Length: 259
Length: 328
Image (tube, rainbow over all chains, first blue to last red):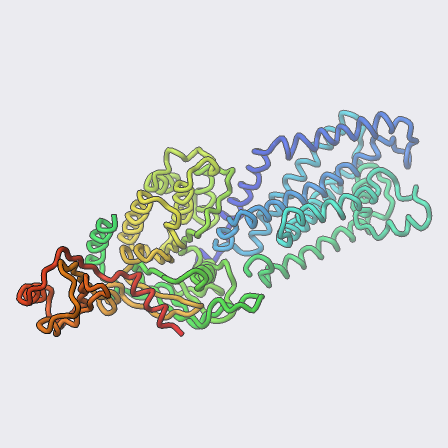
């Protein structure tokens, strides 16, 4: 093996930098707008409506929704960042350069998913800081909070990457986040505990993977969870493994990239 | 313009004969069948010599871009093998691809990046250490230095094309693919591009250009390959090709129409136009047929007077069209 056969870290860095530069170029869209919308959630649900809602599991409603709101943004932003990052060069045709470059599939993934995940983690932390201005927060398990943040960001960036490769039109690009992810997040306990649901709905909800993400994440804040933390972590890892398997298949077959 | 380009071509061509070089790209038995069942390439075998300018000619849809895309790693081949400087494009894809620069046909650039950022990105993507001086030189050579802080979206079409070239050259490739480089490009830029290609060749870069502007191949190429319906139907040194297949023609505008070619001129096999106003003499370049001078003497002797005369070489274009016509 000679030098050039070694991993192409420069390429990973080049892609990562371009992705991060895009975030800062569109700072209004990528940072400020989620902050504004989160603030609105707190004004409406935290103060206006939240003041009339009882505590849930001993947590004030405004504080209770913080982990769910962070997850909501983390999920949608990870997916949209990663899917757009790979769809855009496909759409304008500049993907030729990536495909003709001496980069491995793994390096492409690390760069794009790394870029998308970094952005959504930054965003999650900004939302957390914004939330701290409105409601009293406590984080009982900071390590696990960061671990869930990281795992979720990476998993859903991978998921977004898959959507970006699969999508043939801008409409398809929007379709999955809009029709599947947003409803699942809203119904996944962002704004309530699933124990508040009537019998059958509680069971149905357990088929929603987002429930486990939000439950585990909320546990890292307040030590209270809808389902056990081990199950939450396990389900997150299962979803990560599924995404990795799909990406591996895409790259093995050249699906919608090299055909 | 045409003449200037051919003159320059003569200079470079004679100073660097192509036939003494070894092959840098070797394509053997490559086929491509798309998922739709369309056979874009049928069993392509082709060697590109080190340091040459190779023109791949063919009508639209002949398989030129598919072939280039396979060599560059953009499209998977269905079968066959390709090596670049001895590196297999599958097994040693890193080594193979780092040697290649590609300028695709379409202007496909991230519109919101600056010229400087986008060219440095390309260099990084190909695993090269940052080198500001080199990137500056590339941009200066392509008259893009003044625009280095402009976003790609603000550039004119010609400048975008140059930016695509700058990206391809940013990682110092040894082989440069130019896919239809002058499609829709104005005369001045075309001249610049030809000059650039010649400079690169002087530096030892191998250049493969696809074109359906035959004039481009005629002006630039050392060797010409013709591809049609997914098959290479001919590969030949350009000079060789022109010599073998080229023809010359002299057309005389007559003062007085003739009803038949006079007997005294029968050895020239002249063609008389329908209205009797034109005589055409066709002779090939290595002709063993009598020359134009003797024809003119004989015309005088037989009393045929002409108003004007016109001679022309058959162009590569005519050769090309004839070749495609002969195809089943």
